[in-house]
Length: 410
Image (tube, rainbow, N blue to C red):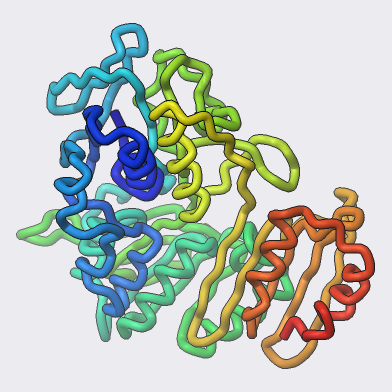
């Protein structure tokens, strides 16, 4: 039994089928869609990708792999003693081995007016479809939060001709991904294409109007200062939280996600977790972290599937990594990209040219993380150095000067 029909769940199902062609595999999915790439929904908003292009597997995937997909079924309880999963519609599913790959959901603040039509997170295809009904030339959007998902949404809306204001509680964009120097370059590029950014403030109320057909519909937001901004659509991007609520009382160990070991096993026999819901080991720190990105989810799902099918397989650990492109300006960060000298890291910053920036973070003789803005072709090389924790030797001096094997990092 697999709860979840995205990256971790699908890769787990494939891994199981490669080792076991006859055992029954059931997949419970809250959504009604076949598996698609959630991380590409912003491209759907821009019109660059169709719904079909979002699919991560062909439409006959479930049939070919003999997988029983139960779409539109939300898991509400797991009973490890009875080895059963219960859904909101009243269905009960038994299992021998269970994978929890339920991902994460946007954190939606409890503000006056949040019930209004036109208020969205951006996590699912359903969210993206809903947002499209409110955007376009002449429309106003407010995006709350300056993180990765928020800016991807803002970028998509700008491309659709919508006027966008981003409300950021901190002093710079992408504060979990980039440092201030890198964030300033991204902010400059987005501002040049029309994005309005309000720093050091937050939305305290959603203003709405009455519509005879739709009821309460968002019309604006009120900031801490009392200022009101117009909004035909409001997108909340204040982070995500792992979908673990239905596991309360199950006995499965929870700590900012589902705690797993190197085999993606939970503390209970025959129950595994993978993807954005699983708190596994971080390669750099050795501690448990939620590094919620697509490549980590696929790898964790594969490892979990192999172990469920009886092939002992260890997961080496994950690193944090994100990349984005805003109007031709590329930005990527990986590993402990924002770690500082006060944490025992060595930091080197390079400014090789206009719209070019490099931040290299070293732990001893190893590269622990980096930030690159502009010309990111060498990012794969740096990521490998971070993931493999390769002792650099004399190469460290080259990197500190912006080179690797005589090749510039820009």
